[in-house]
Amino acid sequence: MSDLTSSLSSELRTRVREIVADVLEVPADELVEDKSLEDLGADSLMAIEIFSRFERQLGIRIPQEEMTELEDLRAAYDLVARHQPSAEAAGV
Image (spheres, one colour):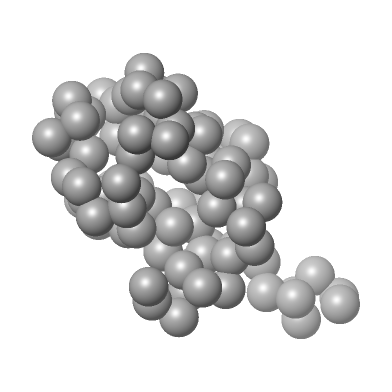
């Protein structure tokens, strides 16, 4: 687990997992962190939908060029963690 991934709360990790599972139409508990999303049936349109849902549901912005990084659930956690507003920016 990367430092970024470990910085995500368990609630946020669950939300990321649920978004990915919903788009891929697989049960969330069947997603394994290091199993390729492509092996689970993901295609480029699904990747776009996952990014779109991350942005809408999690309130983050992910540059489109980073879409190629979405290889597995662990990469999804890292992407979300990298684009979360910092506590300092949020005024905490």
